[in-house]
Amino acid sequence: MPFKFPPKLILLSLIAAAIAIPIALHTPKPAMAASTTAPTYDKNGQMLPPTNYREWVYLTTGMDMSYTPKMKGMENQSTFDNIFVNPEAYRSFLETGTWPDKTVIVLEARNARSKGSINQNGHFQAGGVEDIEVHVKDEARFPGKWAFFSFNPVGGNGKLFPQAADCYSCHAAHAAVDTTFVQFYPTLLPIAQKKSTLSEAFLKDEAASSK
Image (tube, rainbow, N blue to C red; front, side, top):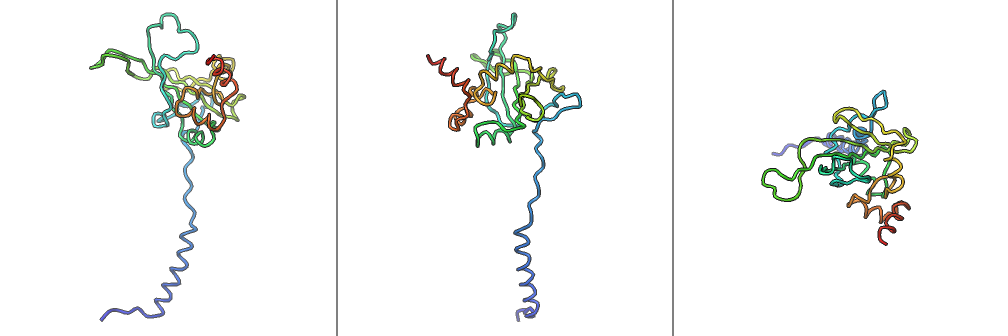
């Protein structure tokens, strides 16, 4: 003979379930932790090393790129520059075509080698990281919104490039988007074109180079 619940107990169970459902639906989701990829600084204004930047979004790699002649004695030395950006900034760029505040772009330099293992042609990246530079957007901290830091030696805190350094004027005069060289980031340039966020300076450079 099957067991039967008393009618009064069934009614109380139905009432409890009816109350529990809306409470469950309106229970607030736990707040997400603050981003750990935002720029941070020590008491002297030096930038702390961006941790795990190699797990960020990879943008591109350049080889032997330079906007000035190579230094004497360095003509035969080749270098790869790997570029990474914090994921929050990348997602924002996909939506807007420009960079949000707290963008951190990391340039990691590694030596290029041609002889090694079974390689017969071309170059590959070898050895450890030779240099790290960071281009950071921190609107409340820097007069021009953006700043450059050099991490030399690698592993130490980043030293701020002075505002008179050539990198600031070069980026302002030639960068495709918001003082950054998006023209060399093949996955982002089409987005900036679509969003119409390319700088007038870059468009002028492009027009001149096509003549």
